[in-house]
Image 1 (spheres, rainbow, N blue to C red):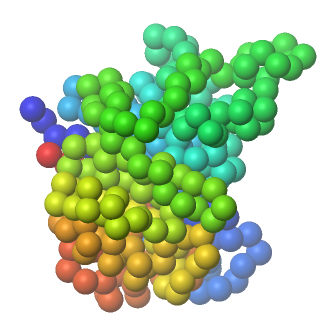
Image 2 (image 1 turned 180 degrees about the horizontal axis):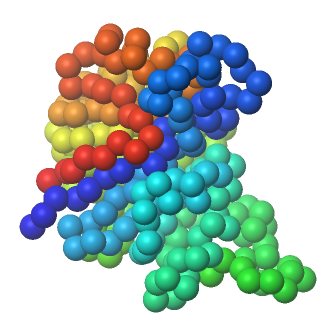
Length: 259
């Protein structure tokens, strides 16, 4: 069997990098690694199924850059605007595919999502073309998307939560504060490559910091840890020089494979 492919569609925080109106050294940097759209990834299964995690406000731009011509499913970690408000750009995939796009979302997030995008669920007087999806619930157990098996866990994010996923030897976790000891014990030794958010160098009340995420990689015994969801206080070149062995920084368009 061939490997699963992963592409970092975006690795930025809620405002992206550069931030509008900011003249800090990172926001004004000419280094393309410091240009970060909102955080999302694309995985392509061994048989060619494309699954996107979150639809950011730049989803259209990210999908064009990835030459994403077919989409088999979307999996939402949560529905904050920086992870959900590219939703309407799923419209073309209804016509390019075989019907409504399956979208997986925690049941707790669905009522607000349906209200926010009421026009897509028949609760609006709007008469133009609308995005066509099949909204599915993420269960609190292992489930399958196409040929891939997903193991979800619920993680705290301020007063709310996000859902992280393990797919075989790969894991993706964004916009979380911490893992519990039981969650760490359950996933320990099962992950070769993990992409996880690390907002900034110092602690934040609702996001894992760079040192905290590096420690999480160590506790989970991750072989290759990749930092994402990084803010404008993180300079790619400077930070990359200080990371321990086995830890690296994501960048928009980064691609790799996981066996």
